[in-house]
Image (cartoon, rainbow, N blue to C red; front, side):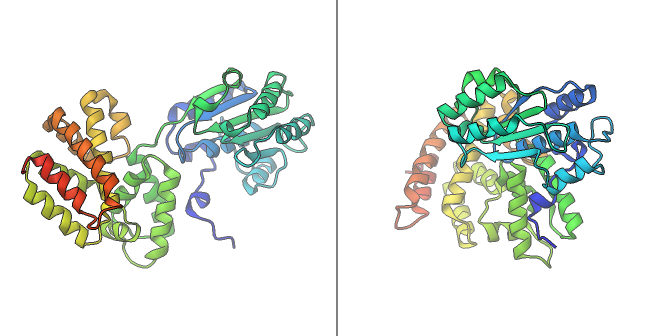
Length: 365
């Protein structure tokens, strides 16, 4: 039996199991239910947010022979062939390695022929922004005069690199980072099915470090389970195995700096370094944390860009500190710790740049 990694093993097979992107799922579901299918779609957004997974689900739904509302039945021959990855009518191309005009010309010739088995011939172009200029223009020609039996789904993490004429030929859907609570629930469901015992705090740590990318979170969980398959996994285990930094450390550290407690901050830093905390990862996590506060200080309405991936308790703590720290102190902290993070790799004593930043930010010397 094939031993699949978690993100492939638990890839959703129906829309109801898909995590996040509710605004996109609802629109696509309406199109499927009404039979109002476009010839070209563009899925753009951060990595690991479900672009290619939703593209496959959509392809399966439009080709399903026993559609249940808008959900694929997963039982008909068309669904079974797609689930097994055996149909030649669903074509996935990674344009990072197939980006030339000859590749697109070959595609243009193949797309002319009617599907051999499915209702549609569906082409998924992953990382489509990497097409060369000539290849993009050749693709545009196909999109301008598409065969009736063809559906194109372009996926990209860099929308700004797509040529405007291609954008104008597609229905565009913008994917967002997946909120932390949704990632945690998905990871908890996987652990339950895998019969893995794990603390909620450990799942929260994995979700926070995945930064809104479910696929990354599932990959981290996979790695953790492979290290500790037979014991209950704690947040400390996750930190030790992967060198991840719990955001609660950044919150506590920030609280000490807000209080100008240089002694407490240095003790806190070194105590955690002795426990195996990586100074570079800590600096990155703390800078990212300060960025969250900066965004919230600009406007609380921007919380979707700042804290969406965090659990509610952590969100509340970040929002509270955003009110407590003075804007000028925040800017000073950011400058000092950005400089410290750059110097750590060259320092004879790795934590020294961080200690200097602590002392300067607290005005001790």
